[in-house]
Length: 259
Image: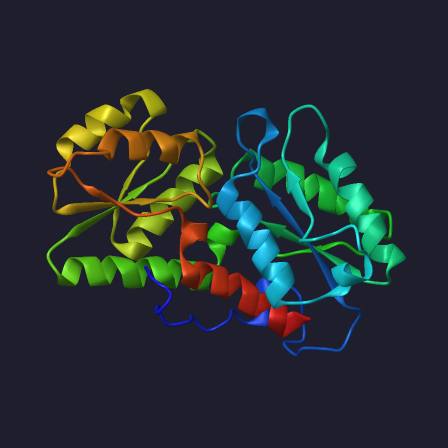
């Protein structure tokens, strides 16, 4: 996808759970807090870091009151610290500036973090009267799924075969979501373990286009790129979702609309 890709219409506010009555209301400014997977050693994926900077630049908000913040707050999940403890300083900072803290879960799948960690943290922070709101995880947005559908249709129209590739998960809800997504998009969804990626790539050819179902680059997408580098007869590989200009625009449009 390129920068000329048409913008997708924003999701209804009712779908995002921010406006029960279906109308936008003037409220305190939003204070978005992104939550995502980090890389090995706690490194921030480059695509994600650039996106935080882009959002802060394109959609000025209450963060500009705090000179120490050059981009939107980003919380990387870690096993060494509960998510609630990671979120609390950002939520308190938002309240200090009389803003509404809004959680943006940048996940493609409803895995353990979405189902348990985020839900538990949001319940605790809501019970503590911090007023934390959250959007659904990115992979569940109808706008994102429409974009995947459009890309798939365009590829099929020129004789190519889209293949959606996701890392495996044994959680029942994740499995149901992946199955639903595949049926909705009419796509073959592959979920091989990392060590089995070479076997899958050997079965694909130049007519196939692999769509990594990951928000940002990770070791899975790194391995894919390494396997396909220099293989002219192999499948094509698209970038992770947040590298698509239209996906970045989708999130930015929502934030602009609900400010």
